[in-house]
Image (cartoon, rainbow, N blue to C red; front, side, top):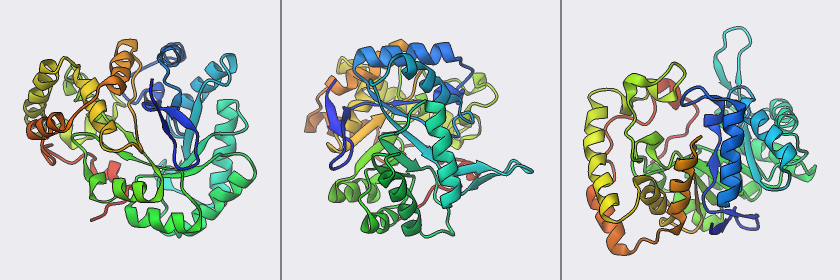
Length: 330
């Protein structure tokens, strides 16, 4: 597995990471044993960069990682996130970047992971009312205390990144990015490159669409994130399947799986990009890892753009409820 640097001055990690939201059942029921088996295969493939969050199953994902690394210490670089909480009365999702909440969240994450330090700590969603400069100062205190190695933000705008970076260097920004979600090309990928910030691409496989097996929305269980996502509802879904079938044929013609080709495309967008596909399948992990070994030239990239041009996807990537907290720009 090739390696890439996690931000200027940051550690070297596998070019492809492992998103661990699925450990909490985001795409269907799972178990700790299944999560452990996934982590073991990832380790064997050289995938050593794990991404999780405190809200993934209210700690389920972090605890699954924690019990595994207790028996397998020192093998992973871990990033986690905080800044989202639920109102205890209404259960409404809220964004809280206050020093008190972020400290409580970080301490709980460290406890669930069974570690005293994580390499990277993100603010999962920005709290609109609180200046980002103030939030950076809170994160820097955690870094000075030795609890985090670097700071990051998820789903912010390029303008917000530059404001944050003016206070203290940011290790990474995490946003959705794939062949069917390309908004980061409107400034975020470029801003990260300019500042020496890693761009961590989540959902690089289009939430399962850019793989060999087309998801079936009718089979999505309750709790599957995609059930309420516009791109997976009709008529958008059928339009998207038709477009992506052309990409699957192209991958076959190139002797690659769709997943490997989609990940290779993300990696080709800049040496500061790190895709973090999530899966619980050993077979899928191997396909994902193969993307790091697939080299694309300009002709390959042009053909991919012809088959899946920017903006081809039908429907928004999030519902209005899911979009809350993600910054829009341009």
